[in-house]
Image 1 (tube, each protein chain N blue to C red):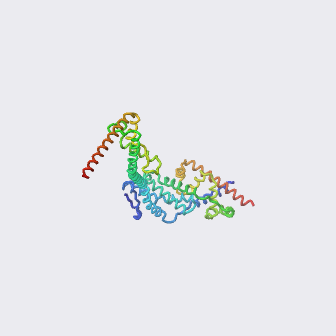
Image 2 (spheres, chains in turn purple, green):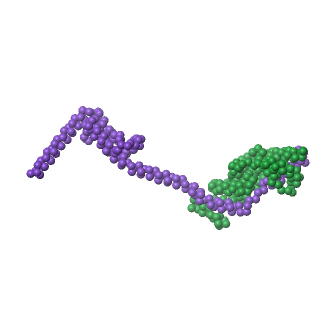
Image 3 (tube, rainbow over the protein chains, first blue to last red):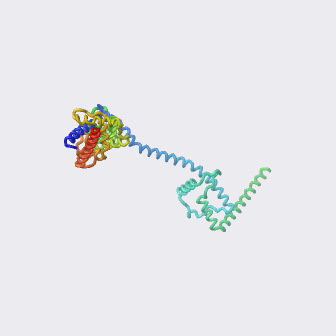
Length: 187
Length: 199
């Protein structure tokens, strides 16, 4: 490339690049930009509020879920009670019932909240059964009773036998009393 | 809620986050930035995108970004360069999403055919469409650092030190890149001219 030719190319390039950079926006660019920006804050505000909205929604959903679960708990407790009674009755046939005073309650007595939560977890882990009331694990009191019977079977048997005898005596007395009252009425 | 009314009285800008005074100051700074530098932002966008519609969209997007960071605007020492950098980034991002420029064979041969007359009367004539496209094509073939420096140099409002700020490099590096870019373009033009004249 000779010097003259280079000058010519330089001039052309200057002109071409100058032309290349020439760009005039449509009239009113600033006003359009400002108008667009003026319309923006609503979105920005919305963007600032959405985390709060999401948090609130999550809180409401959690509360609703908690309420629903809390509402279900008595249903769980009802079978809990009946099943517990059935199991205790079943155990009574196998192992004699122990009077309340004989139970070492302080030994394994957990707080009601912890036992409640334990039951909830246990209830959740168990599959839903078709049987009603659903079988459920022994309560702490029942477990203590079972442990006592396992540990002191003889004492438990004696207590149970005495209980049975007392029960029979009471039933016999009650039967006599009703028979006497019936005969008095007949007279 | 803080509201500031932009000087023409028609456009309110609201800000829920800052106090009323801060919001007004920020909004005022933003308004000043728009009024003073919207054209610069537009030209930077146009130098990259080569399309008025896209350049305007990029300008809007750039100022939306400024709005997002308008609290920083007060502390910015050189708002012009700061805005130029934002505009440059927005334009580059948009350009990446677009298909590359391509010239048909007819357009290229027509542009090359016009090259000698264009070169002869560079000062008098404005570039034809094909010539402008040819220049774009030649610029697109440049290595990226050279192309970026040359593209920004076509924006008349930007001085070499401002181009350096936008590109995150030194002024001497920008000057060197511009020199090399021009050399490459001249060589290519000379080759094209020779190719046309030789047959």
